[in-house]
Image 1 (cartoon, rainbow, N blue to C red):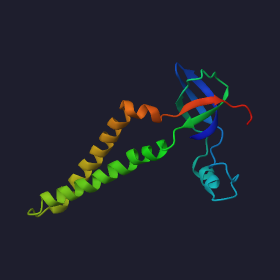
Image 2: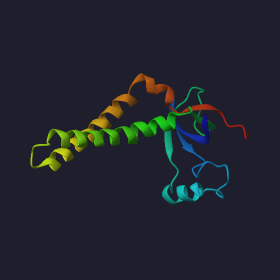
Image 3: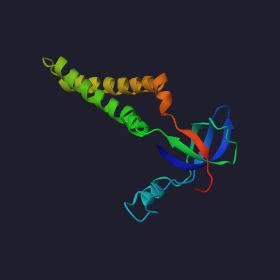
Length: 147
């Protein structure tokens, strides 16, 4: 499980809006190692807030530990980036092959790429909205106790 500390900003039914305390890399090297902490400070100036499940009933102001299942981040990256990119390439190839005898072959390749990209985004959105995705959502695991 991937875990990080956060503060509950707002509670809305069984969900909570949390602000992550640690937004500067993994926290393993206190910013002295790979440089991810410095990079995140450069591009992420303000604290980010996220909506998570709240199975423990945390209240506003509580310091909590937010968990994400192993592999959920990698699956999310695959859905958001790799699936549309793969369908973009497949659409471009299909458009190019289907228009092999036509003079304006590039137009058909570009149109196929555009349709593949849009189709990839729609497909990833449909997959994310399915029930199987619900187990990969971040959730509040427990109260932070100064561990």
